[in-house]
Length: 94
Image (tube, one colour):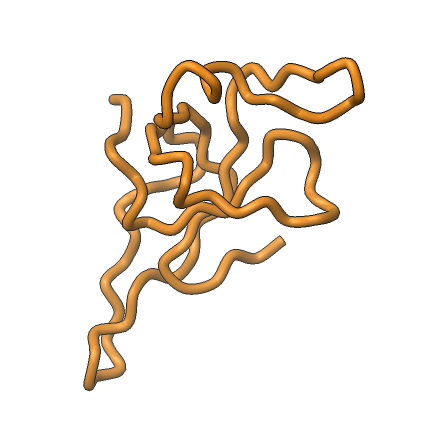
């Protein structure tokens, strides 16, 4: 999958399954911050009024923290995979 714009594709850590088969990432019920690994990175944000882009400062394999409400579930992706808007990324582990 190719991610577009100012978004990243991530895989959440430690995805658990409920009794009914729903995927529940660890930590989701305790707080609203999720830890994940970057799988794919978009091209970045276009600067308004120009054709220049601000590149996303992440790369495949980076470990990040993001605010849960900035993630989108997409049908057809494996469990724990989300598309996250960069404005919701809180930090990156070194």
